[in-house]
Amino acid sequence: DADVTQTPRNRITKTGKRIMLECSQTKGHDRMYWYRQDPGLGLRLIYYSFDVKDINKGEISDGYSVSRQAQAKFSLSLESAIPNQTALYFCATGRGRTNTGELFFGEGSRLTVL
Amino acid sequence: AQKITQTQPGMFVQEKEAVTLDCTYDTSDPSYGLFWYKQPSSGEMIFLIYQGSYDQQNATEGRYSLNFQKARKSANLVISASQLGDSAMYFCAMREGPNLGNQFYFGTGTSLTVIP
Image (cartoon, rainbow over all chains, first blue to last red; front, side, top):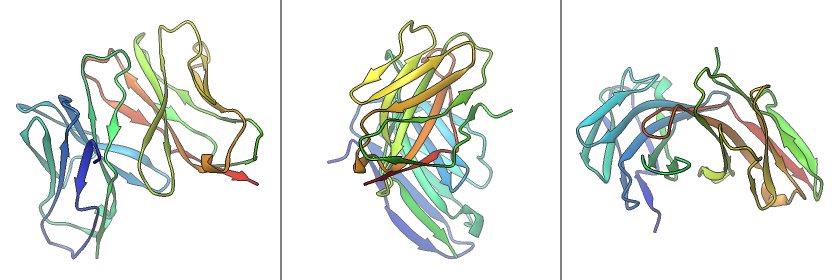
């Protein structure tokens, strides 16, 4: 089983619908992140959380909200989806006390907003 | 200014040859980390290699090495003896500041195609 699990893996929805992407991890990491990937733009940070009580906006947080329900769970919500939110979304985790601090990614959630 | 710049949208390499993927970065923080990730067509992001700003030697991981030129602020990835399975998108990333708390910045990626 994957250490960082995202659900759903694929979702097609309509403009104006509420969507939640969920992420759970078994790595025991304190830090969790949501990124979106668009062709030619790389990965851009939406929100990040360093622990359950700590939530921070990334560079493109408008139109999104998050919830850190537990150390292992971090969900991303689109309250009213719009077509330009069509993208590949990644959840990632990281550990604060580590020599390298690399991020570990889930397999991605592909969202299409019609 | 872009934190991470990858100027090669696409690269081709012959199987068994070596290839260098370019990455330059911008930071005024003396403490930072540089990373390379591989994204195959299946979509997952795979961590390849890490270089710390204070590391004296270039990082190596199997066929991957990171050519770290601090004065030029470059962190190029070298893949030796390319294999067909190396065909993928490659992203350079930087963690600015010490590892306890900081954002990661990603480049726009380089698409590598290995030709048989």
